[in-house]
Image (tube, rainbow, N blue to C red; front, top):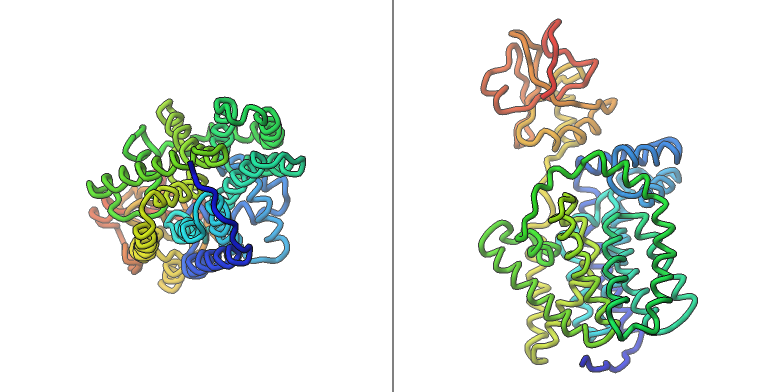
Length: 462
């Protein structure tokens, strides 16, 4: 059984929560100003730039794959005069509150130092930091998942109309932010109806959850439209190794896709399961364990059944519960052992964030400036190497007049100048007929209706 911890002064826990929140904000702030928009962020920026709320919802339905709540919030903020880049600060704010809230959740079950460690795991975890400075919904999704857990635990401990309403409201907001929130709701409902310890409250809690879910379900027709656009084909077939790796990869990408990484991923999952077993000594702790592993299992089963929507960022909502399970497992160690282990884990996370944190994206903004200085005026092709969609939207966003670039192949024997973007970001101009090696290795990006690669000849889509 988990020992009941002595009550600590609120001010002491508040200081830890504030310290963790500051660490989270400091880890995320540089990305707000140092990183250009990447392809998904450009898609968000185009949504938030719509002139009306109706146009926003229409664009979300046909261009995005999540519900429109986050976009509606961002649209209102942008309408108030906040530039799109600075709207990334919303994710910084959500991330800081997320880390502080993880401390509050974990401190219900472990000592304050270990709860602070759980908060640091979320504050400095790679997936949380990466999405914590993006113009995307993921950090809000993670925060609402945490709030759902806190509201569920609170409603289990004390019967209150206000707590029931808070639980329903969180479900409505979370379900209107990200579709994977439904896996958390499903896991909670299944547990409520299987665990005899919560028999007396299962009807009350289920009704609250279903009431919030009914509001979120208003977006179901929108979800069907989005799903039929098949934006998930890149995920590929089911891979059990990827599922096992999720608890570790939420926090670090060290040794990813290596044998060492596979061993570490398996070890991390075992640690999480040990922590969940310890948490399961109480009904409230079981709820935390279920919200940590249940959505992971549900998402994996859906993937195995053919729904190619399983992706690490879509599982960011389980992070606070996984972190709580990890520190609960650490408390199984002797007192003299778990403190240095927790400190070492936190330090390793800092090092991992410095070495592996975030994707190393090209500086699309600087490349666009270089293209203009080199003489690009909208009628010439831009040759890029590697995955063309990596460049397509971001370059178009940062170039003058924001052209909608598309992929193309040159045809004919005589072509105009081609602006070659090298992997280093350097730009050179190739005049005359593109060399065979260039055509074979690069992809050409052009603006339909304006670019003419070859006189009086058709441009074929790649």
